[in-house]
Image (cartoon, rainbow, N blue to C red; front, side, top):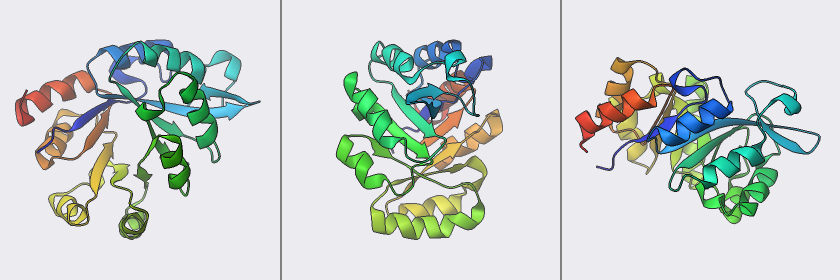
Length: 208
């Protein structure tokens, strides 16, 4: 079984969300992936969970410059509004980083564009009622990763999804018991604000 990916959620290890400190800690802690939130204003892509002043936020271009310095780490771009996929991938292409971009959030229906431009798409849900429709949609679209709140992952649901070739990305697990449970289930990805703890538990549970 492949090891679970560990993603450093925005604000990991006690840093401010989407800050330069978060970026540097997330990229240097050993996590496989770092999560950022992306918005746009006036043609500028910037990092912020909520609507903010782009001038006071880290720009996406600045983030890409830091990502470029850290080989191997991918980025989960959680886009907060529709219509940002093309702009994100064009800016990433300028840094030769499109193959390290994973999309979640407000990008449903843009799977084909993401694939054509070299990124990766994870189908996102926020409510349990969306689970079964999501699996049916993924069977048709060919999407392989279902991104969802960690509590939705159970032994039964993991097996059900695996039967149609779907794996789970689970957010945001921030306590040891839940991280241990998800690692034992063998989910594809765990997004957490405690990546250092999760990495240690992964080594313990899944091997070095």
